[in-house]
Amino acid sequence: MKFRKKPVVIDAILWSGKNLEEVRSFIQSYILFSEDFSQLIIQTLEGDMWAFPGDWIIKGVNGEFYPCKPDIFQKTYEKVEE
Image (cartoon, rainbow, N blue to C red; front, top):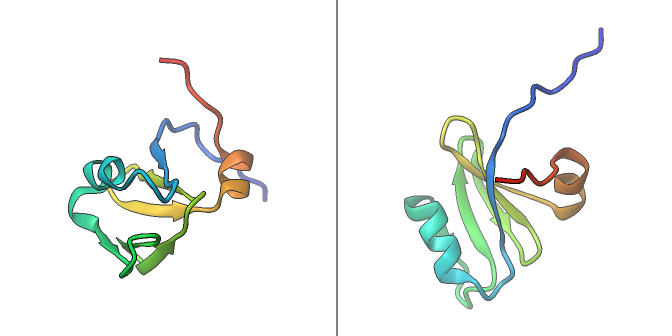
């Protein structure tokens, strides 16, 4: 069998390594930081996951957050004009 992913609009933010306050505001209580604040530790439903500069942080359909590598993000999502 084959399946197609349902079209769902998501909220996401790009972690640049320099937009800490913007990411903190987006994620709120689901985030920890490495000692030098260059990497994020995101508490996901599957456990803690690392986000590195250049990764996207996605808010899932149930309000959960998780990191996504840029190449996977570009293959999976396209920008929605608001």
